[in-house]
Length: 148
Image (cartoon, rainbow, N blue to C red; front, top):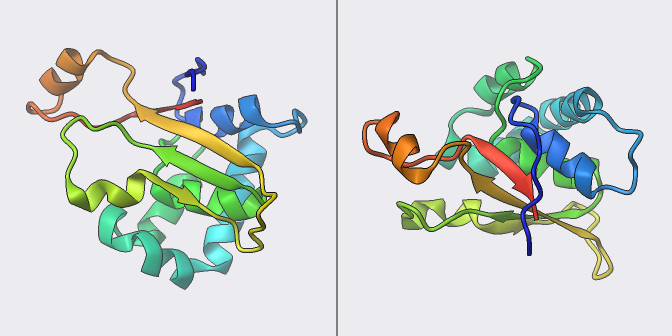
């Protein structure tokens, strides 16, 4: 798998999906709104699946409603259902802990079938590891997605 460059503008998750999609008519704003609707409609499902890692879904929903806001695990899980495809989330082993296993996972859409397409996304950072740690009290955490 080879990473593909996308703009680091807060819509990088949605830009990554578009880069890998055959439907080039979608825009980041459209995907963001569709993701938001999915999360609101099925809030408890996503809360039960992800809240222990990324916090309350209602806080994520408020954040997602702002264009160019950074994306997290909720959006990946919801996009798999929005797009009716599997999304493989590839999380690097930098500062990896067992509680991050869910980040390195394939999210299957609700009507999953063997023939489902899988989109691969990589969590990364826009700066080098050294610079990223310097700006985050010595810790590394991702702030960007790229398609693989």
